[in-house]
Image 1 (cartoon, rainbow, N blue to C red):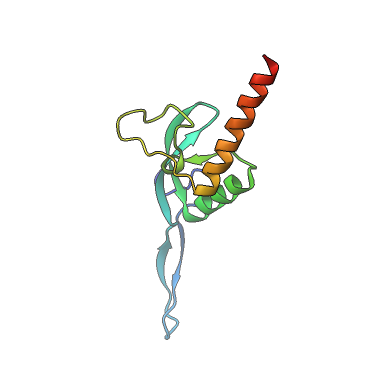
Image 2 (image 1 turned 90 degrees about the vertical axis):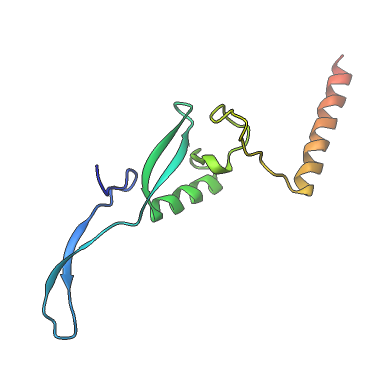
Length: 116
């Protein structure tokens, strides 16, 4: 499948060049395709996909809304086992996120102490 988006199905179409003289000559319109590595949560693997720019924007929107759990591997930290070599990017947290994470850990420790 050359020059076809695997998500939206966009493919090369044909049309006409129309200069000022309106003399029509044939041309092709190609989709704006990129090869992206995407994490598939169903299979647990990283797969290469040919996606159009519009499809990539749609996936980012779905990810932000939480409607789909499709993640770009460049943004995934230790959430999955793919790329467990020495060159794994760690997810960076803001100071606010660090404080929230520490607060959750303290609450869990308190609850564990009360339960025992």
